[in-house]
Image 1 (cartoon, helix red, strand yellow):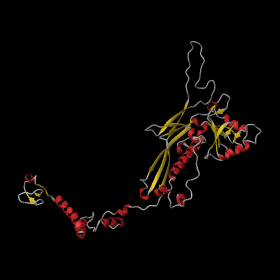
Image 2 (cartoon, rainbow, N blue to C red):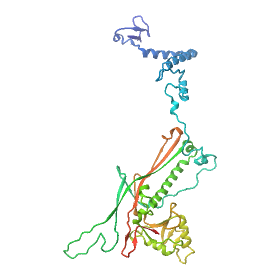
Image 3 (tube, rainbow, N blue to C red):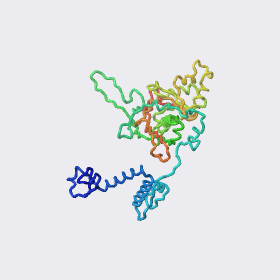
Image 4 (cartoon, rainbow, N blue to C red):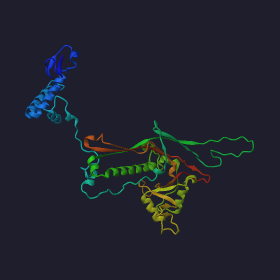
Length: 411
């Protein structure tokens, strides 16, 4: 075993390498001098020499590098000759390491797939010149009917909800549940409720917007603008689903879809010119029990048309039926909904939105990630919401023989 003296011993100077059979006898004056220690000593000598003779050191380093690189062999039988670490990197990028692992084959060149500065319409217009310091306009406003619905959160391990509702059919003195007047000591008669049920399954609504990091850096307001616009788009779409959705497509039974016929009355016929009679008939189609809290929902064209027919200066009333300043129609608030159709049959809706139950799971989830688009320096903004919904106040015939529900429109 080789030992290197750390103290003078028996006439030998410090640093002398000796061979012994029993290392324990020399533990106080020597340390083990194996192959690792020898290499460490060589490296130290090179560094010390570098201070005195740089040329010798460089030559020694190149020779050492060549010796080490010659020992690097690929999986095949042929040898790859590399002069330096820089040579290794260059060959890897250019595909020069034909016999070994080629890094270039794993590097894919892609063009941005989302918003970027290269394409003007996809964001380039925002940063091409220093003209505006803010972004103007809001294409979509907040929701008008969806926020007024009744919300129920779906618990963990569930992807839907069975939603029962009271199914009266008719409202008379003998309708179920029925009440009885009894004489003293008389036997009570049992009654019961009749129910219907919606079996709702959550449906995912998602928006994915890739944006280059350059665009986010150069237009500091863009990220907040994208967030607000996507939220507005979600509000618009959820309003649309509440009005026109189908259970299979969106998870929502839209109140104006044919599948919601049992929850919607049509007491008036649409006419090109609205009258006070038509307005009152639509209002009368809503059950008196839920009429407090009712509002109108219609498109911009419907509202402007009705104001032109029943607003100030048109009728001989002290108080106009359609009030454009107060945004009321016969005293009930009017909501102009961007997603509703032109003035026509079934496009003016009156009702109590709280009688629509919406199930959600976690609300609107917003995630930001750059993993998927890492190779193109893009950030992905992902917005996800899972919802379903249906009306729960079933249509019934009142004692006056008029059908009423929580919502009313025209045929």
